[in-house]
Image (cartoon, rainbow, N blue to C red):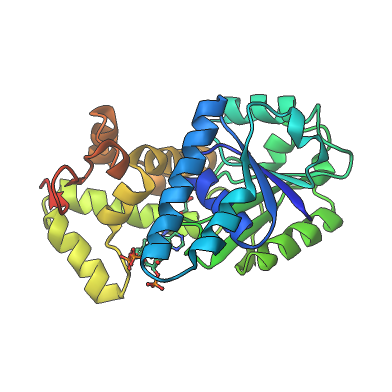
Length: 289
Ligand code: CAA
């Protein structure tokens, strides 16, 4: 695979594009318009400048990485891409419209992958022109740092598609976990109930935010506590995923914590809005409960 396209230039799409370019491949990035795609590239430039400042990479290497990233206004330039990775908002109708549109320009050998964290791959494959070339490719945030990618073949995904996609993921220096197409795949199926339970613990005043996070950081050796991590992932994304688990399995153990729903309704979505379980308006995050 030599030419990659990423659709969606937010936190995940930018991280994916950066990682791909850091591994020597050319990557096109699109979003709702060219300005959003360019803003994604500007964010990558900032991340690379930080790495240069810390002496992690050379300035000319950062420049070379940036030169391999091309923001594009629409899907037409993706006609010669070998792989497109969709990393748009976690809403099925948005992803459907993307696959239907980009499917019209892609070559007959291109693989279409979705970075969805919870929507069934088998169902989304129907939105593409060829379900055999459709697959789940689930990255973790922050993409350049995290060592794992989940590869999720749908029911109709061809073995060749799974093999080529796995080889691509390993070429990015990541380890691969192959998951069946079940709700939440492997990691989110385990992570989201933990985050949700932490919000129940908070809602029942068993402990405050700082102690819940401290407990998991020190007691489990996790790099972040579950509430810090929820803010990092985005509380709306956490709620979307736990709701998918709840709706698809109809198992009440996945019912969302009422306090999580309230925070999302308040627009307190975590780091991206400046407030979630922590307030990010000052120099250091401050717990809000
Ligand atoms: N590009 C390349 N490297 C980067 C980078 C970037 N954009 N951002 C950070 N790094 C590097 C830093 O240079 C640093 O490298 P060294 O260790 O070699 O010095 C390293 O990453 C750690 O960065 P920081 O020192 O800035 O920060 P930290 O030590 O506090 O770690 C963290 C931050 C990596 C986020 C850590 O807290 C962590 O691992 N947290 C848990 C993250 C996690 O669980 N992610 C999964 C979320 S779930 C998900 O993504 C799936 C889903 O569908 C919801």
